[in-house]
Image (cartoon, rainbow, N blue to C red; front, side, top):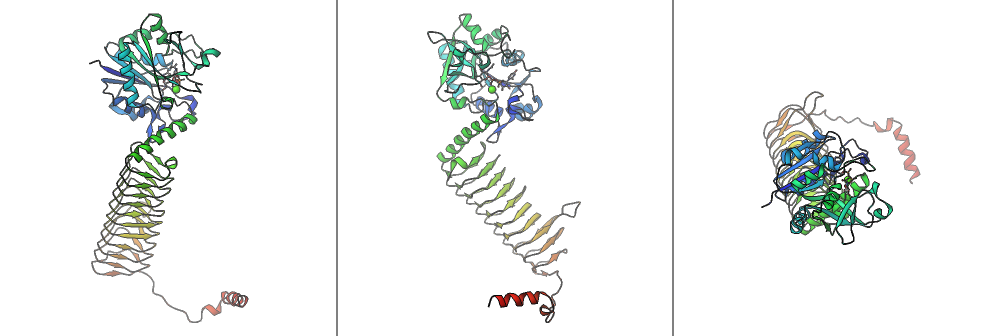
Length: 467
Ligand code: UD1
Ligand code: CA
């Protein structure tokens, strides 16, 4: 079997992005563009992949890790020069080499495979992947001779009017005979509008040497979209999002309005889950079956088990066990763990806390740095006072306990099982099992107080007016 190699070009700065972030690291649906390219290439059983790095080399390496080898292009002298930097790694090897750019995130493994197949079938030394578009501006144009053979590829900036009118474009992906590629690269020159060594120029070299050059035209131009600026980035994101969403719908997920549902590529969602518009599911989030994710919820790097209801809430790095629910307007901050059938109601914030099975925190509360057992009721407006200005402290609340509304639980403190906190208490001491803690001033009523003060006059006037 012929060995398969790949080279990914990722050394450019991406000036047109006007960004501090290197172009190929801009994410599309939660994954950097260059990672999309590598992920799809990897699916083709590659012997070796070399990524050419330059601008932001360190950041690109951190992003892709040891999934690929790297060659440094210290100065960006063009795509041909970039490929040449892989010569010390690949130059002496027999096989086929695919080249792709780090800024074309939409290519699929299937297209790379088809290109390999076509290349082999044609017995070519070089095959360029082309596409047809009515708006070819910015792309290299495929110039074919009278009998349809690729003669050369001309860049936008070097194209004559006639060449610029050609609507078949270079997608920036090629397949080469590996040894022939590196031989030809030494022959390219930089006498063009940009003063760069263009990789596509090797096609003309092969053609002149009488070698077989082929072009494989893919059906779907959209897939070849190169991202050079933020407008293209938004377009590529739209295409990727549609793919992700359609894939999920095929797997049995209901998206009420897929055009307005934003799901990252690595997110998983189980069948019969219903997702309303405006929802963002990000990172490594996994959602089970039969869940309801209500409008405008955001879920980041979290695990949502089966049968969970999330109503207009924000969830970060948290776990919701089966049958639990949150919202509307709940906020689960990192390391919240919501037990089976537990209820987190409106305007409740939970951070670094375990909430046991069947426990309810229904309204307007903050639970931070705490371990709550099962079947607890936390009344409205309860605050777990976890921070003394210097350190965070932990609170434990045992099973079946009852926390009355409007309480402050000042950590560190332990409230045992079957314990009771009277409403409005500020708890600073432990409470033993079956006891009640009450910590608030006693009420005194002052006779006739209302009538002594100006409010009484105002009340009287209002009463008369309403008669
Ligand atoms: C390139 C092709 C063009 C094709 C288009 C497809 C050339 C000369 N032109 O144009 O025919 O239609 O892609 O999207 O190849 N890079 C380096 N080192 C360099 C220069 C570029 O690593 O010295 C990398 C960039 O990071 C980028 C890729 O190569 O990922 C393509 O470079 P870019 O400048 O975007 O080329 P285009 O003008 O899009
Ligand atoms: Ca490009």
